[in-house]
Length: 185
Image (cartoon, rainbow, N blue to C red; front, side, top):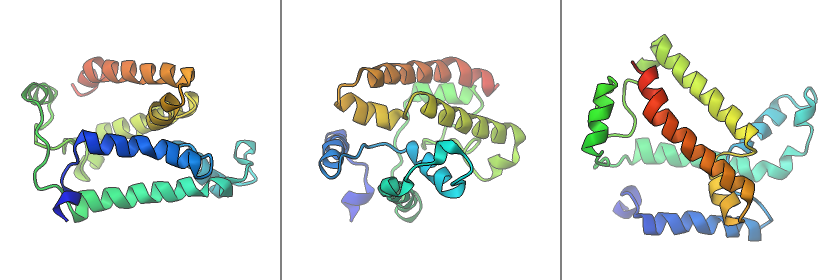
């Protein structure tokens, strides 16, 4: 059981993720991605009211099962079998987080942003909601999210996915180095 709760090395996890793409294509011409699942959920909820949601969402029901598996897997990994040895963060990153007013714990999610108590802070709540909206809008605008473009699109040698992935990286660098320090001041 310990092999399951420990972080897997990149040379195991990476190929397993990469092999998911051809497996999904072989098992029914399906594409790996998660952002389109929100559209399927909306099609279920507001069916018949919005023309954008007039399609057979049942044909894509497998992706909703995938999302459910991600949620269950995240719960099991984070709550039921949490890693007793959290990953070490680079000391330079720790110093930068402290300069931005974030506690530099040995976890990926600072409690100032990712805790139930932080949701009571209007600035934090606005930051999380605004960030979620921008990620959702950007994913629809780009025709997919990072996993869809970077894993499926690049493996299929699609130029639009290469452009999208380059844009994701540039946006991530700009956000991490310029926007986040401004927002957290």
